[in-house]
Image (cartoon, rainbow, N blue to C red; front, top):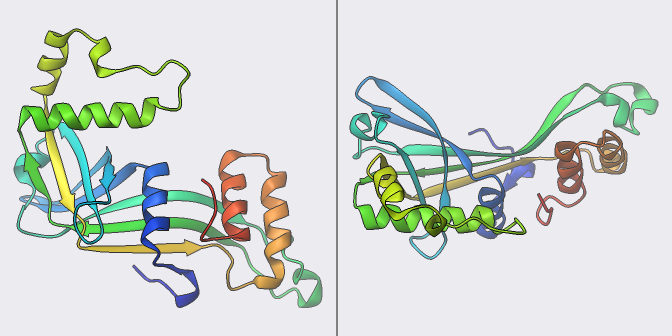
Length: 213
């Protein structure tokens, strides 16, 4: 990924924070028929490996788990907040008019060799963790044990696990760091749009490393 120095984000905690808030990763891996591309919600375990380990699952009917080359690197792309930036938001527009539109975004690329896992208890633990993670925001969280045990067991037979120890991780926070004099105008303009994505990008523009998503 092309990352100019002023857009580079290297803090592991910041990178993992984006993954946790935007867990639906685009997994791109080499397979028998070329590149395999799938969209999977991942968990990240920061305690395993230098950069952490990604864990997810796919449907058994999805032949990626048979076709993917488990000896080669793949990459998972996590897309964070993004927003169109109009030149009208730049204070510097009034000076010489030499401004053009751009697009701001925050993204993480996590590289690693995938491992396919069919162990049923591993899968049960994974879906339990996924459920706990994403239900925790609800007033009355649903639990895996709320469903009949036999029903859950059959569904576990229909999925296959994917684990990717991260060997390389890159973050690109393109958030107008190259226009320090225009930060206030950009953030104010984004907030005026009154959308969740624009507000999230406004937070990043104001403080790229400490923004809440």
